[in-house]
Length: 200
Image (spheres, rainbow, N blue to C red):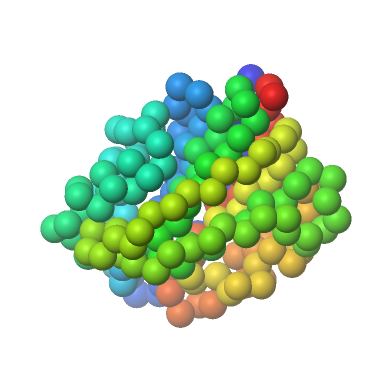
């Protein structure tokens, strides 16, 4: 039984060969690790920093989110660095731990909530993973089947959650957010993850 279903939509800044924005959705021992990563700047160097962060997160997917951020910080020192937000979902206990450094916004919509009503917003801390890491803190929230997590990089305007519905398919939601809220002046990534299986 898949734990989540998710959709991703991306915009690559015209003239750039690849996006500096990457994502990760990967199973770990207790549930699932979800991340959205924005390499500083754009183009190949930004993409390389973001890909390095994805590799580090995958390799340590069972670790707590604060340890993962510290591990990324150490591993990305020779790169441009990234800003990122990540969430670890403990499927057994119905809990999500999330944290963010920089400006990758996160929002959680509860199952059954009315359209566009965001129940939880990720508290972000300024800094750059790989060069200046702030004091880290993670928040822990209960989650349930049908809850929807949205991460967006800064190529998406801040009012992105207005039209999100817990009934819309994650891919359709990601495509629509990109279409309506993309700034067009930077790489952009939208990651929409719906919890399909929570045991607690």
